Amino acid sequence: MFYGKCGEFGICNSTKRPICSCLKGSKPRNAEEWSRGNWSSGCFRTTPLQCQRDNNNGSGAGQGDDRFLEMKMIKVPAFPDRSSIVNGQCKDQCLKNCSCVAYTYDSGIGCMMWSGDLIDVQESSRGVDLYIRLPASELIKFS
Image 1 (tube, helix red, strand yellow):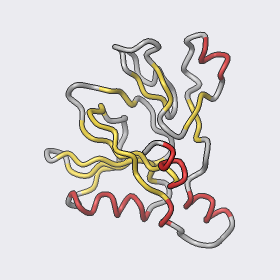
Image 2 (spheres, rainbow, N blue to C red):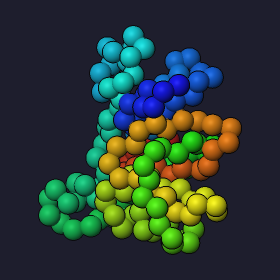
Image 3 (cartoon, rainbow, N blue to C red):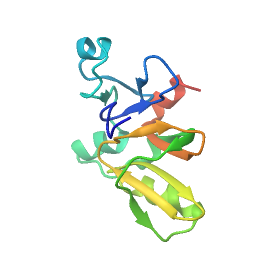
């Protein structure tokens, strides 16, 4: 495997065929390339985060309609923002920041958050639980 094989918002599992899929709530950016096994263009969100829609129309934070999808046993993406806050506050801090798209808490490292595009997400037998931010409307589809 090499860094970013599945592109933005893609997830890799080397034991599956194909090895790349899109994270929930997203779909391939270039379906034709994707079908040929070139996943480098990655995926994109099918529905913008609620906080992004609220910010675009000027109505404020609107953080109540974004939720987190728990993904178990994930090798976390590169380049997290680290924080010394305790586990219970990690989710709240991510929700307060509209650019925060995912978080995890590792007892040895602490709270880690990601902004922008998630790159290099991999399923792993030695991973941690990663929480991906989705609009509530998307999360309902997967429950």
